[in-house]
Image: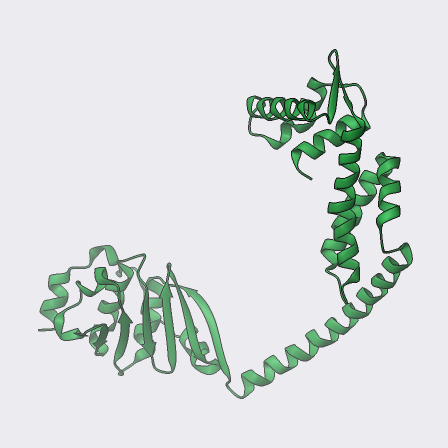
Length: 285
């Protein structure tokens, strides 16, 4: 319900309610009392001008037009949604429960709203019971499927199927990736200009950077020095997509597991903030 309809419902349910009582009921929706007061004042003014509410001194009453408006809201928004959900082959249980809770709360407080709901609903208590039975059967089915999927997951690991994992892109990963490469070259692809201008020319060919074993850690330190960098790193059998301080590793299960379990030396001396680009150039010339 909109705030206007919520206020109108409060007035209808509590004939003669005063402004301050309404204000106390809606104040929790706003950051401060001033905002709540401003919104309620505007709503009351509009409803009076449209003939939905009438004033009697400091008391507020819903007119026949206002009562009809609440009834229409109840029918069009709540019952209509419940009717539509219950017609589905398998409704969303969370939506059904939420809507039924609202239906009970409103109908138990207002007989007219209950009558309207009963007149316009296309479902019964029996339908809810049948739906609950379907949920129970679905739960048993899903439990069985979960067990079977777990078995298949293990079988795919046995045949070394494609796998993936997400790790933090930090010094620990840089060290692992460097040692994981062993004697093979490390390849990095990127369109990040901030990174490319830091790369020695003999490492780079357009957007592709290739380094030998002795320079892999230096390259990764450069990449680490740019937190927002986006790049793709190619390790033996593993593709690593670097983004937002994370790295998504793609490859066979055994390859990714091997990368994760790679043992590295003490990382205390590694600090990307101490990178000296001239040193990198001199070591590779």
